[in-house]
Image (cartoon, rainbow, N blue to C red; front, side, top):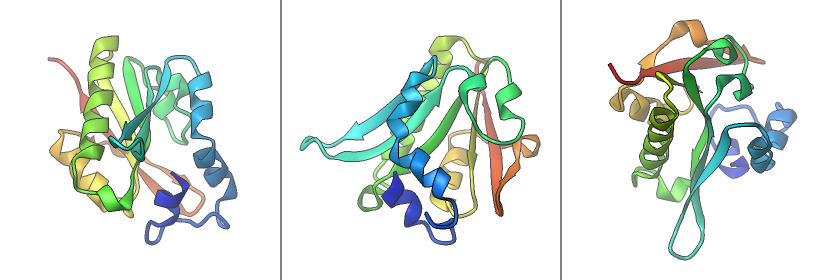
Length: 154
């Protein structure tokens, strides 16, 4: 996670947001929260290709803005795919797995955040049916963070 996020063009560096990178380095600690999972894509050689954090309860989501007050919603945070594996469907598969988990939990929507520097992910979310939800936007230091929402069911 640290390698992926630190390698994003125009994304804050570890020196600019050290607390954020400590969180990324310790991504497994999210599993201590109720109804929270870290999902990992692994190669046949047991190499980690990507990962994401899934929250069945938005109260555990832990971002800025209003997202943690959303009800009947699951959340996705910190999707990362090894740069050598981008555009291979790993991010899509991880996201779709999170959507399936949200449906199984009975939630009516999935919420996530991304930034302009994550253009590939942004486009993928739109293709998967997520829509921009400006009421979920917030600032993380000097970084604009944009909310997205996917309605589930009818």
